[in-house]
Length: 146
Image: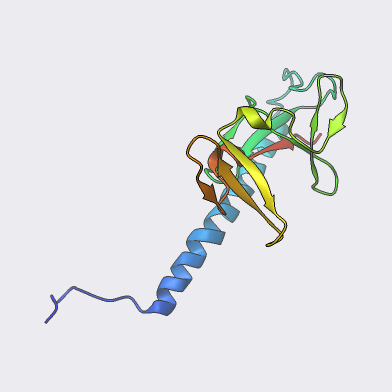
């Protein structure tokens, strides 16, 4: 016999809750991550902001897709994204490259499985592999729109 308040949740409810946790939460965070800087911009918060990337004369903020964090300071070697969403880095000589020139310095690196046709993540210290993007590699550089 079970306790009077010992309820079992049906599998369909568990599936729905997992869906909410996995998709709805990050979606809300992403909307807020875009909306908050836009409101600050409209309030002339950036009047005295200096471009983070002096070569491109553009102002960026940084958003972590895993943790939901938003910040102005670059957290590391965050790639740029072109108009098609393709990632690239800028070398010290100012050239675009599709491979992170500093990748081997980091704990986590992104790899690609030709067999499964998808990216996976590898921890160079622990030799652990994961399909889930670690927070260290989840930062996006987002251009502040004028």
